[in-house]
Length: 153
Image (cartoon, rainbow, N blue to C red; front, side):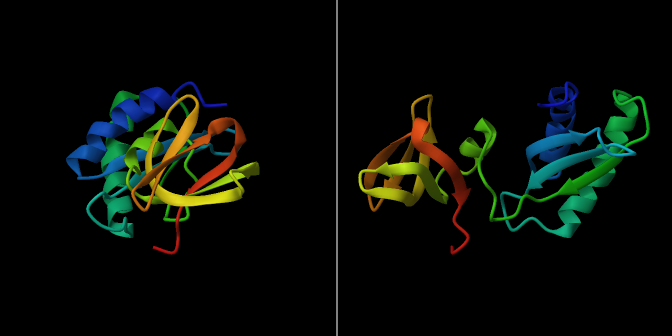
């Protein structure tokens, strides 16, 4: 379950990231740890996300979060990059990685296959759409167990 502060944190973090030429991929607040850990995943759309991007985002977001004072207690801010082996889950990720090569796994065989590879076109309520060599494929979401970026690119 998503922590109730996550939407506010993303609202604060998004303009900070944009000012640095970065994108917010997601955020998780691990309150079961002491001190709690707020992890914000970023992506550099221009190049591979590096340590420098994480450091710049950490400094800028820390100041913004401190000024907003929405997290009352001590916490650890962790900025990371999801990496290329990332599993796609959120709507934002499906939008951000449109056009990237993905691997879709299904629980059972669909049209004779359990694994599909192609460029991500989009996702809607019923299916995930891939481009396979110019042909659009619709894979029912009810069968899908996993969608991840292709690491072999």
